[in-house]
Amino acid sequence: MGKTYERIEGRLRTFIERQPLFFTATAPLDADGTVNLSPKGVNGSFAVLDERTVAYLDFAGSNAETVAHLRENGRITLMWCAFQGPPDIVRVHGRGEPVFRDDPRFPALLSRFTAVDPAPHGLRAIIVVTAELIRDTCGFAVPLMSYDQDRSLHGDRFRREDDAGLSAYFEKKEHVATSIDGLPGLPLPLPAMPSVPPAAG
Image (cartoon, rainbow, N blue to C red; front, side, top):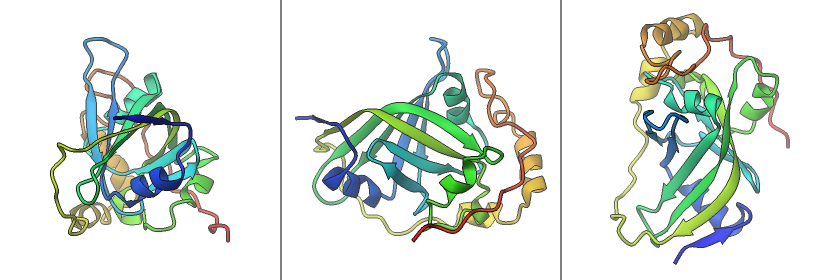
């Protein structure tokens, strides 16, 4: 029942942009390494950059497995599933890259996220994914669940931290600078947040 798409456009784009939650899956090259699966939320933190490129904001957390895996091999799968409305599951398989605060591309990329204030969330990178395979499948077995609202807890926790405080927080965590399997994770100390140009239009 699945279908393969050449581009992220039309109904497919509308579907993924409407979902309040998606998942990322990555793994190291080592066959015995730890496979990582992460949920991603916060309204406005995901963007379709063009018909084959998407990006999301990588906020503060107690580990950095996705960043570490992408730095090693770039492989990533993103998945959205419908918890309301017609059943559907969409996967984007591709190559990802963490763009860090001190990367010259960071300000322009951040300007694409106009529907969210990243300041309270300890933004540490932007993950950019180039699609290599885009597919949808039926979501007949996915339960119907309602979305109420984003939790405020993440912003409540990290809005208290400036850049120095965020770096200190990350340095105390065992698996931020280094992954569970010993791969390089988030580069520290955390660079200062660059100024962001105003959004076009």
